[in-house]
Length: 183
Ligand SMILES: CC(C)(COP(=O)(O)OP(=O)(O)OC[C@H]1O[C@@H](n2cnc3c(N)ncnc32)[C@H](O)[C@@H]1OP(=O)(O)O)[C@@H](O)C(=O)NCCC(=O)NCCS
Image 1 (cartoon, protein in one colour):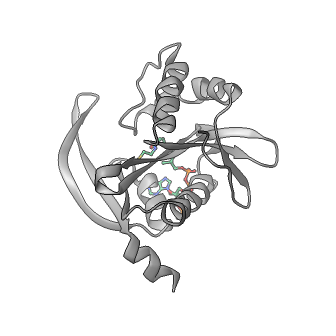
Image 2 (cartoon, rainbow, N blue to C red; image 1 turned 120 degrees about the horizontal axis):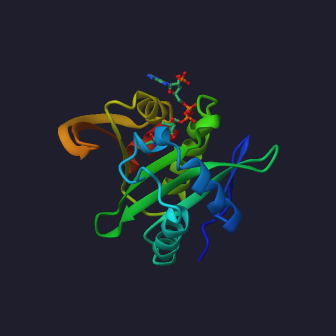
C-alpha cells in the first residue's frame, strides 16, 4: 500500500515515483550526502537507487517503513527522502532523512520532519519516535531540536564510519511528551 500524501507550506510528502528514484540516483551519489548517513554507500553504485527502492517498497508493503519523497510544490522538484521505520514489537519508530546538497540550509528538512513526526503520532499507535545523528553532523541535530525532539544521550564511538569510530547522538519523544506539547 502506498504511503499517504502529506502537505506542508512548501512541500508535498508522497510516495516515490520512478522519476523520483532517478533523482535519488543523482542526489545520493554526492559524497557529502553519504558522509553523514549510516546507510548510503559511497561510491554510490550505478543501480544504488533502484536497489534501495526495491528494498524500501517491500518494507512499505510489509508495514515496516513509511518513506516519503520530499517534493517542492512550487516547481515539482524532488529534494530528498524522509521516513519512519517502526519496530512494531516495541511500538517505536526511527525518523530518518536526507536531502540533496543544492537544497541544504533552506529549512526544508525541518519542515518535512515536523509534518512526518505529527503523522507518526497522530496516525499510528506508536509509543515513541526517535532519531539519531553522527556527532560530526550538527545540522541534523538542529533539525531534531527544531522539531521538538529531546536530547537523550550520546553513544560514544558506537559505529565505525569510513574507518573511524563515530559518536551517535540520540533524540526522541514519547507519545506522552507529544500530547503534553499539544496542550
Ligand atoms: C542534515 C540535513 C538533513 C539538513 O537538512 P536541511 O534541509 O539543510 O536542514 P534545515 O535547513 O531544515 O536545518 C538545518 C539547520 O542546521 C543548521 N546548520 C547547518 N550547518 C550547521 C553546522 N555545521 N553546525 C550547526 N548547525 C548547522 C542550520 O543553520 C539550520 O539551523 P537554523 O535553522 O537554526 O539556522 C542535510 O544536510 C543532509 O541531508 N545531509 C546529508 C544526509 C544526512 O546527514 N542525513 C541525516 C542523517 S542523521
